Amino acid sequence: MALPTHISTGMFDAAVAALRRGEAIGLPTETVYGLAADAGNADAVRSIFALKGRPADHPLIVHLADATQLAQWACAIPESALLLAEAFWPGPLTMILKKRSDLPSVVTGGQDSIGLRCPAHPVALAVLNAFGGGLAAPSGNRFGHVSPTTAQHVRDEFGAAVPIVLDGGDCEVGIESTIVDLSGTQPRLLRPGRISRAELEAVIGHIEAGANSESPRASGMLEKHYAPRTATQLLSRTQAIASAREQDALGKRVVLLALGALPEVCEGIALPADPAGYAHGLYAALRELDARHAHLIVIERPPSDDAWIAVLDRLRRSAAGAEQQEDDAT
Ligand code: TXA
Ligand code: MG
Image (tube, rainbow, N blue to C red; front, side, top):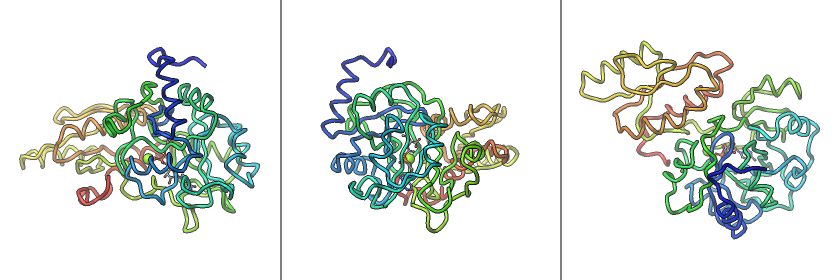
């Protein structure tokens, strides 16, 4: 498999050697960059939790080179999992399955289920193939913060603590994988993503929406997540412009994340008015707006139709609990 020209063989080999030594590296995927380490090495997995500042009971996704490795991690694999892997792997879909009981549970945060995904990025696949085993890789950001979609974002998060970050360019999808739970009695969508519930249902039939009280925990489901450090509000375009004017009159600076085009009176960034283009640019835009150190980030609310579900999910979490920002872990 051809690597991007800016990743030399030497860099690639150094990355795989670091993984073999149990170190974490920054790894590009088609969704967001991951902080990857050997999923079969408990100390390596613990170092991911420590680097991210992530509570030990929040499970990590294990990345695989292909679906033939499913049985190394999961047991009682339902037919639906094989059908979904066939239809969507490599790709932005994570499946929660029953974990093999002989595996350590540090990677699954103590749960008896495990998240598995085969990413569709040439660099991630090349690393997985060379490494040979599963790679635990949560998004490469500090806990609760905005996910990274460029190699520089990962460097900004961890600096010298993660010396190897493979640069695979901008992530194509831009938001995290769709998560479907197949470990219970009914398939359930735990996190919306580029692959929609309807697309999954076309392959395996009805899928329940959202988690219930028996669902495994998923940290992407916390109310405040994917959050910039600046206070953030989600408003209609009219409200957004009014809010910018009001704050301006109080001497407070507002930056706007606009849909389609930036209104003339506002400072900010405009993202494309289609869901895929918007998702692709979302996290880079949030990071850039955050770096402007304004008093407030106002996000113009996209339409509420099905095509925007995954984007809206991230936006609601970005804007949730902005007032308590300072007390929260990031
Ligand atoms: O697109 C993605 O999925 C990216 C890239 C790097 O692959 N990874 C990612 O990982 O978003 P992370 O750790 O930031 O989010 C993974 C989500 C979390 O919400 C976690 O709780 C959930 O997957 N998850 C993992 N294993 C699980 C399990 N056994 N049961 C329930 N949720 C699980
Ligand atoms: Mg994450």
